[in-house]
Image (tube, rainbow over all chains, first blue to last red; front, side):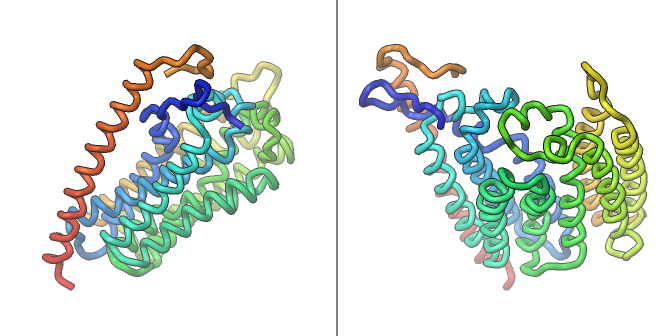
Length: 303
Length: 49
């Protein structure tokens, strides 16, 4: 467990920057963006104050999930180069403070969502936080290489919550957007896992490259990229989106599959710089941002 | 922010600085929330059911 910042009987108050880092701000930006797109793509109009408050609630919920994840994994984070500098493993923050911060933020985010939108969105937000913390972080991640396949559902909730916050009900399009993020998660994380494999192995986390080996992981990246591409394009032929989204999805998904073929058909050598894997990982982030932007553009303008 | 756990003797100036910055932040946050909840209430009143 992480050391706390104590001096005998006196504990230094946590620095706000460390509490902010606990919320995984970079992950939060993708969550906020996809949630906002879900909300903006929904039919009807939402009062700007209520829309802002709903997105704020989703952002705080994501921050709370990140904080509770870091609180639980402080010991594992200390063993990995990539995460050893985080506030808890580096000893800049007291674990008790991190736990209280995470639980308080989670409760507040659900309350804010309930107050600003509806109980359906608040319930979905609560389920996504609980799923991320208990099902993904505590149960799946240390036990199975399928951790991010099933756990990916937690990250897929935001556009669905955004939509439900605006309409109070679930529709096929946000379910397809949920499916898209769900299927996008394995190739995204396994591309990362391939080039930080030794980190995961050192921490004893059973990520796919550590357990099943590199060859199997590369094959599965390609498999998931193909079904993800089908799920990404599906809203167009099914009539839920128009040509703006459709062509964006076709072009970007083709690029995603091409990059996945590069990753899926090669083997790394000694001292490999893992450029194709890094390229796929970086592209996968841009892919999701642009595709969700296209969902909103398509809702507002038609070709 | 430091990367290593601090082992130095109790630094009262640092303690006061952190306490002050946290108190300021809390003040701004609570003020912001009061405004937010006020505007949410107004928005809910003017939104058609």
